[in-house]
Image 1 (tube, rainbow, N blue to C red):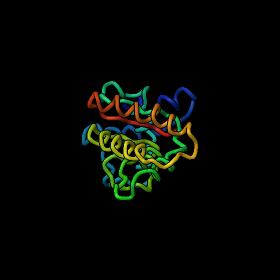
Image 2: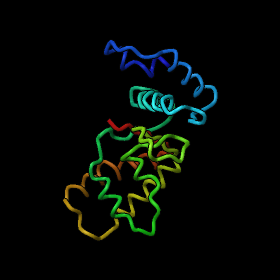
Image 3: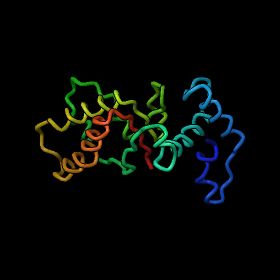
Length: 169
């Protein structure tokens, strides 16, 4: 796991703290993914390694997840604004900032997210409610982009009852 999580540095000739990375990943492998009792520097190291492990070049197939597009969704704020105020947004903000798996902390902005199948379904419902808003879009191409790059991806993933992971570049 440590080898897979550090291939980027090794390919670029970089130097990763393999002892610390191995310790953190061993903890994840034996106890599950949890940020409990990690210091903030350790949490940032884990965030970075998870971005690699959950990428299409990591363990995507073994983990039975679909990887969300790495393209930045600059239009996410408009999409979020389109959701009726009566609906609590839980998952759309994760596409912009990421989410430290298993935490309630949204401020960390770890640049990755991992969603269980039921979370993907809830995200799809949030997107559907935004798309149903009859107000005009700021740009007609945004609606098309959301349909093609988000709504269709979510429909595919939910139809397979799979989880989904994404990494912000």
